[in-house]
Length: 154
Image (spheres, rainbow, N blue to C red):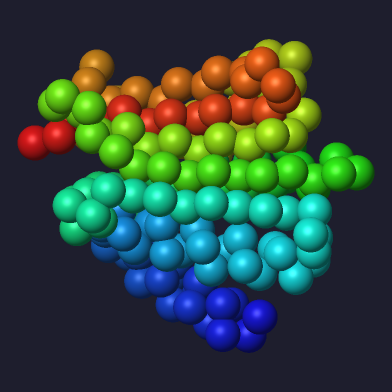
């Protein structure tokens, strides 16, 4: 746990000061965070992280994925007796990059808009990419939420 905590802190502190990071670094930060949370939740927290190899070196703004992972745990899985699964994926589709964080937790709250973290992501995406940067939240049929970040691949 200490190794994961140190890795998480190193990555997150260095990336909060940087203007860009890579999808690979965002995935590694999410992995370290989830490993730490697995100590707390045990078998109740499962996760799967996958990114296309050529996307791992793609530059993106820092701290886009982390708040989505935090929300998936805090609002979706942590209070659920059975816990659940978080899946993080990055892939490209035509001229767009899609990064998804999907959980099998409780689903959206009454408003479906989320809080400060999601608002911050939306504003950052809009300021950097205009209408080409999006955060899409969808409630999953079987429970939970899929949060998708879409940005241009260029």
